Image (cartoon, rainbow, N blue to C red; front, side, top):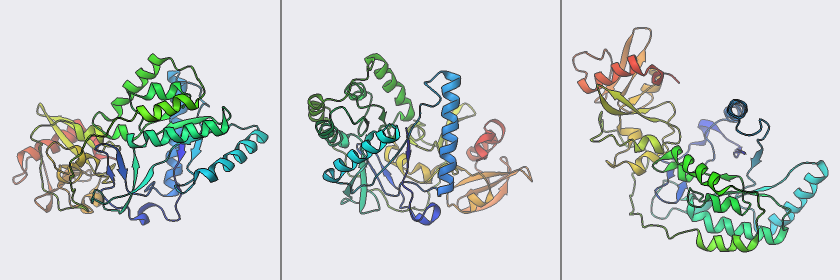
Length: 362
């Protein structure tokens, strides 16, 4: 399923998105907007994903090459009483055109940020707190539409409940918030294994089991101490090394902007400026209570990117074969072994140049 994200009147850099914009310590919260890409950039990403899925389907035998569909959000303000007649009209229209029509449940849930968790006053909830709400909507739709309305699901799915959700006929199941927690994309393996073991047989949803699931699948949320995260972008505090490289920040980054490399036999965490949109999710799970996207040694793709940031880090200058380094607030061209370059930083610079050169490019 391709969810076509909201196309705003303004897009790209003009959106001025609040940062940090994600908090996923238990249930998930995010600041709007849906995307920071321009419309043209979003189109290009959809096209690339479409091509990639066709390649995977053909080369790895993962379903049919034409087995992908586009879906879209109809907004946060749609009320159930208005949704039912709208869905009836769309079902009738799709049948007349010989097309398939179904719905995805649900979108994020608008709430107030009254503890300063994120910089915006209005934020959007996702994850397991949506589980009983989404299942209740599914049960209501089943009572109103019988088996005529196919439904896919999104809202708190994880490895423990995904097979139960699929067996009710809520399929396919979309996952996001769970992947923003430690383990990241690797959690998809456990979910796939659970679905395979359940041998999902395509049963259509039924109101009775959906009602039961809505009341039982959502366990009580654990208490999360208020972090009172610093809002905005604080001045970075240079830290070339972590006390212990746990790798959590790498697994929870949705953009893969934190990576673990090996330097002189030691694991080293590096932040990549190019993919990072400063969402702040890595800060939520950092064992050292730092802001990895601000405080850790950063690799930049070019001079302009380094000069546009306050992070300590470096970029390679291919025209001279040297580096542009910012350390202790000072920018200068340098070689890894130059006097004044901290040895631990010089070793990382040399390792990236010699062993991980792809990190230096977009």
